[in-house]
Length: 318
Image 1 (tube, rainbow, N blue to C red):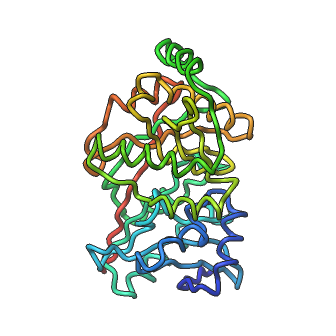
Image 2 (image 1 turned 45 degrees about the vertical axis):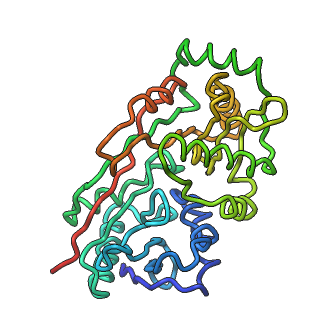
């Protein structure tokens, strides 16, 4: 077995996305249809892995803008990592990751920042890359904490969340109409500016573009009071996980506990879809060094538990 590492080119976009569709651990964040929305924001360094002429894996990657000697998988997504169909197991994965490291070393990079796919997203166990990273001497430089519900074995919902759901259900109606994304985005932007002095990673035009590309995967769930959007979430979903990418509520929405109704509706839909997990996303600040414990406990009260989002660094110097 000899793994060949080939730089990605646009001519391989369909082949790349076919591999993601057939993979055991790929999500929409790995697809070229998703990554291409970034345009020229990142200098791409993605690679395709072949064995005996057959594509066996892909690795989305780009050059770190503030550190051009470092390559990241992937700076434009929550996670990156090697995506494969299950064939890269054990020693094969060790060889594959070593070949990737050698490829980037020859390109002049000094380090590879590797963000593995959290285990809940894989349709079957696929953490061979973590073992391969350890064999190569990689170090874990950051760990964020997400909260996820196992939809097959959900923990008990707290009394506070049950009271919130009862209050919200009397006040609001729930909608998953994607046409309400601009109205939700206004709530989101106001929420981020008011509470954190921040802006959303995606503009409303970008999220509408992505939702049009992935209409069954990027979904909105929101609460309306008197026809007005007061709270909601935008989810980036996969076969195994429904993930809350954006969460927001107006002041009125907080007063009425509307997020309780929104989340319960989304969790119910996720379970009916056949997904295994509902992921609320991480609750970290300051590059992972601070946990917003109040936010984490709020998510935990829906019946969830902790899932680590890990960050590794592999030095590439001789």
